[in-house]
Image 1 (cartoon, one colour):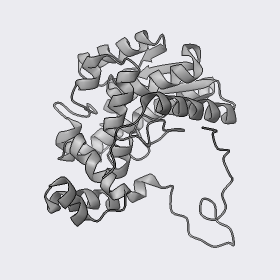
Image 2 (image 1 turned 135 degrees about the vertical axis):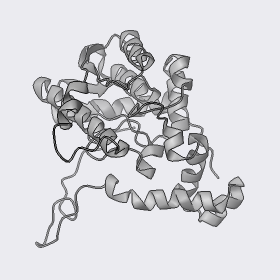
Image 3 (image 1 turned 90 degrees about the vertical axis):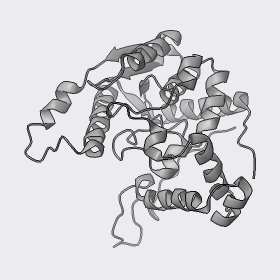
Length: 276
């Protein structure tokens, strides 16, 4: 099985070219990033600053009543470290408004967590519309492949600079970019409800998940991955099932094919590639 180690200097250079190209193609004024105080959003904003400069990179911090003060402080710390202008928008009043609907169920943690993620997406795009910015998502390859993101929530964005980097590789780049160690090493959490952590919700450590997904990327069978990593076959098949069940989240809406050329299927406009 191939190593997940990357050359951070080369990776950062290529990602920065990608960011510049996408912003230029869109004729946008810059990038806006939702800052959570976690490693992924911290690395994303650091990359955008390196690519575009701090004057063209903006941060939006959107806490709720369940957001830890430490996460807010870490988000501010990163914005300050990279000289990024940021705004704090408390979204609890917005979430409380949903409670007025008869259908609202306070016991449905996942559905309500998704409401928070989609509310943040709306605010990010409102700011993007006001100032002609692109929204940079913060999802990484590990999360995208198993569907650990909210469709039209944190999955709603214009570009995903980290989308082809496993969590382990994001950590490598974080160290290269001098992200504060306490942010790199704290337990990843979306903060959707008290005590929530990503690895508890996924039911697997990111380090193990990365290795399994890398095996599938190399077209290995579940049996081969299990033998190579000495992991239970049941765990490998569970990750495989997560891959399959979440495929719809990585695609645009399915379109019924009627004409000879169909949008998004066999009628696509080419996007210029980035020289690397």
